[in-house]
Length: 306
Ligand code: SF4
Image (tube, rainbow, N blue to C red; front, top):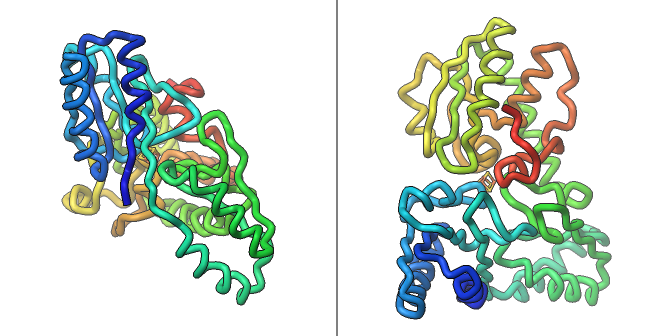
């Protein structure tokens, strides 16, 4: 497996924009290749190029704010390809692609899907594998399946999903339903909570102080107490000492709430918190996961609520 960063785009940008300093960040799995790229940039152009070593989980997690702090004038965010090419004031998105082949998986999947009597299937993927969609589609079609891809939108490319935005997959994917059920269950569990920890994410695209203030006010209007917190990484260990808190709401990544971590209390994302407020106000829970998409706020495609 080899991951390839789109260096040609990086070099083109540098030649067009002549930056005096560049700040770069990338997910953990791409740190080694990104470091090699920063060295190449320094050698080729004599430009200062600084790799930020903090965790980096998604397109919400850029280093746009570090640019001025570090006396640079351009940022590169590696590996979270999307339909937009820039985020914030300084940050260019640089694609990375993974050459892992899906042939073996497809060969195994075909007999299993047939044995389960599936005839129509949907394909979705994360950024690094987008180029595999068409070959995968052709293989499934050659095996007699009807194949559906998700429609591109203003943020996601065709059949692309982020952990927090799988809107391209809504029409085609059962997994969406499973996530929706998990998300709803947590909202109902949080209805019994008296004290809420309302956490503002400290990562760049995750700071939503306006939203946390709004949520705290709504909770208090309905007899709950809201404790305002701020955190860079939200994990069970970080929340464990806060024993007097019955449930949490966080403005960081919705995946924290819906996938992955095993929290001992409900930890709601912003869309789930909106659903909770609806219930507290006697309204329907609604299609909260399909409302103005979270990540579109963070990359500035729709205005933030103050
Ligand atoms: S908010 Fe979205 S883009 Fe950001 S880390 Fe979470 S899943 Fe990834």
